[in-house]
Image (cartoon, rainbow, N blue to C red; front, top):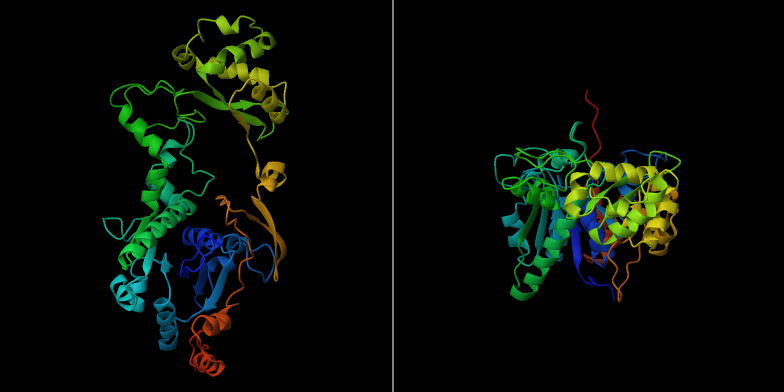
Length: 423
């Protein structure tokens, strides 16, 4: 049996943060009803690569869901929304501040309609504080949550991360909150409001940078390759490991943009590593060189450590280098491009790049379920077309007859009224 079988989620989220959360819960077995406006989630048409088909932006965030279109500006549409709300365990939204309130459904009203429902809300900066009315996007959240200021080289501009920590990271935080609130609801019978702000989520994911921020008041950060004396904020430190052991990206042949391997030089492996690379870089006594004898010495002279490893790595591809280092028990990993990962045996073997078929776009790939449950493994199914399950949901979930559905459709519950030409 699926882990969340029997849990119904009314999902009003759009774009990335909310859909990441609801897709994860759908993979865990929840019945996710994606309630869309008649024009659909905006990402259906964004960054299209196949004409007249849902974009990958949409399909890769909305697997395993059912889609119903509801016109929330219509009294009949609002009535359908209320009926779905009454029988849902979770309602999710990531509208701008005040949007649901203007529809007539603030949290207090939603709780009154269904006291057991858990409401999940994603906001850029939360519903309180001086920034609460500001709009946020992925990179804005990274900028304001501390990630950008600590990413990149010290002598260069701040960088956003390739990982979508503002959007998808916030969606993962919300999933944790919703499951905790469901557990409490099962004990007390009462639902509650669960809010995650994108800025807050990014701050949480930058936890080790806050560790270093406080260490700066007492000491230099010796593991950083850049000078930190006198700094009052955690600096950008390139590819430094940022941990107790030294780490960095080492160049490999043939020297392309992703021909690197990340290497962590643990104290326990230094002697074996030095004995392996020393003879090949003109330093046969590297293991006993006093500049590198202890970890404090290697930290002080780490630029030279990485220069020597770069020289050694230039003789190997990143995969060959991984074999050499694994034999020495050195923690390492090649820099994997999207092309590398798409064709990787390990990735395919763990169902992390899954082929699906879509009625509009044909074959495409989705990232798989990263959480593996032994008794209820996820089965990934394609995303829904716009309004694909409207009648199915009205009949099966709400028990409406064909005549009732037709009457509501005629009244504009599921579509926008036609535009009337101005005279």
